[in-house]
Image (tube, rainbow, N blue to C red; front, side, top):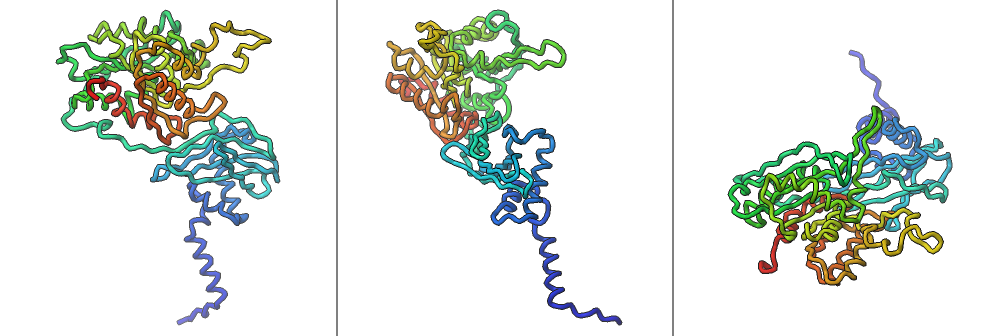
Length: 443
């Protein structure tokens, strides 16, 4: 029997080191941002830098230019509602690259060797957002279209989930609608929801219109489920819902993309969109169903520009809409820099400036309007909403709430910590609907 030589202390140490490398997950190629974050913990070894570089290069292999700062961040969500965010940037070897964000936050990027590639991974909690820009040697780059992200997680209330024994209404996708008068050439998808209780109702149904409608009648937080549950529980009246998407101009020739008309419809603060609904789309619904003709029986609901559009419709066509539900409403200044009247160039007549130019003007108009208009308003926004050249969304929703309070309007402003999305709004939709249908005598 041949005896193997007794291993020395040195060989045992080497063997142990080899085994440690095999079982240590950080020596394997990183697969997640969490693993990359661990590799970037100081001090960062050359081996770790090489692994991080290979990880990001693989993720960004289709990006042609990483020097402009318009590439998309990487996101990995965690079970607590937060997550990891990763950035990757190309500059010159030895440059100083820093990520700057609102609220005084900044994160120096780590150069990966002497390659000119820089990386950073940060962990963020639930209800946090980042609007960032890259800074190279003190020169702040412009914000790109992908330069913001956030984390938010809200639980659905029972009314937002299908409940046993609750009769379901009918959601019908209507034929694509082509505008002939107010937005000629645009085509849009739309749906009509009719509750199961409508057929037994002795009175005309109430009406709710949803801007960006496709996002409200499908997926999580589905408004049709909310309506089913609330109508069945007799917490709100029998209500027909119309879900309308913004119009698009179809591609004219092969190879050309369609043109979205959303901003023109939602951010133009005139009566045009409400009148378009009144004269072109709603007659199709009125012809088929008995709907109350009272403005106080009509709600307009929307998020972002759809939220400000809802208020615009009620403000300019108070004979049509008496109730507004606005989620993360865009009550901001959408004017171009050359679109302001001045002493040097009166580009707009002074009597036309303000009242219908941008939703940023509404707080001032609300304060000055007498007598007040018959509008009941529900507002929702989070303090992690957008903050950019058009304005600060949360502050402008606060301005709206303050103006409504000053002028004696009936309103409710729900504040949260979410970002610019309809997630929080959809989560509180059941409460919003119950409140907005509540009459003074029921309080």
